[in-house]
Amino acid sequence: MNSLNPVYRIEEQFFDAIVDHEGPMRKAELCARVAEALDGVDLRPEVMRLYPHELSGGMKQRVCIAIGMILSPQLIIADEPTSALDVITQRQVMSTLDTVQRRIGAAMILIGHDIGLMAQSVNELMVMRNGRVEERGPIRRVFRRPDAAYTRELIRSVPSLDARPKDSPRPLAEPSAPLLPLEGVSKVYGRTIFRPGATALHPMTLRLPGDRASIVSVVGQSGSGKTTLGQIALGLLAPTAGRTIFEGRDLAQLRGREQRAFRRAVQAVFQDPYSSFNPFYKVDHGFIVPLRRLGLPRIAANSGRGSRKLVPRSGWTRRCSAVFRTNFPAGSGSA
Ligand SMILES: Nc1ncnc2c1ncn2[C@@H]1O[C@H](COP(=O)(O)OP(=O)(O)OP(=O)(O)O)[C@@H](O)[C@H]1O
Ligand SMILES: [Mg+2]
Image 1: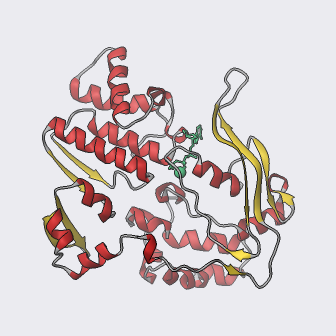
Image 2: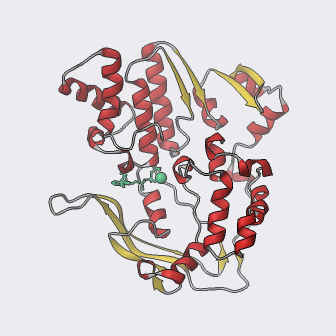
Image 3: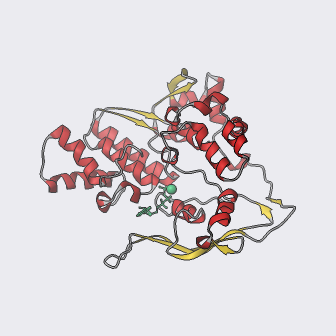
């Protein structure tokens, strides 16, 4: 997703690849090629006129796949091509990759962590752990008779609803009013006096119960408005209509101390770990700055004591806190 250049329209990112390898071409021909490639990953041709920030996470990932395929390569090495996608789009992308692979008649290396998804799409599986190959073989054999204990663990960890404990949400000792209600919020992107814009979120209302510790999941196809909803709830995006209420006040009205109280009470884990960090800072900067801003005693925050308490909780070793963020694999960014 981050291989897209934020200052160029999507079409220009394709043009570069085509012209570099196949020589100059008429614009109409280039556009037709791009439209075809986008269609191959189930994106509308209009997408080519947009900038990367105007696409959802999954749409960006599909654009990257389309760029990888536009030159009909002999080998595709796809590194987690479906990790930001919903299950329906995952299947579509996997079947698109499959079709392309058949068309070009060559090999594909599919790197990923979803063993269930791989099982349905690939011929052979190679399982890695700590830099070593733990197991390798035809997918059916590996699933039926895994040799390595680690592979057995991976297969067992594929989620199933039966395995879930049937507990209902815990009642809270101190019930409160519904948390962070979203009242009729909606979002239209790109509306101007000349253009009607595109509706990403139709008016909707959501109230999290204040008397139970419940977990609410929002699922939906790529581009269905999930991140837009999350960003409105976080106050990072102003809704076109409607309000988000925090402790009886409209989020848009909060300033100064009240706004800091909100920032402390409601925290985010972003979809794209790469773009949520500043690459110039070491990892512990991300821990220390919020501690300082939210009023932890200056000395504790400065000395890094606060961050050292937190780092082990996220499953990292202390050494990690002094390493630059760019040295981490994508999955650890969201810890
Ligand atoms: N900054 C923006 N400007 C214009 N359009 C946008 C912007 N951000 C998102 N959109 C559009 O809004 C729609 C919803 O996007 P959103 O990111 O909320 O989807 P999503 O459900 O989170 O998708 P995904 O599962 O792919 O992450 C998409 O059609 C997208 O193109
Ligand atoms: Mg999203």
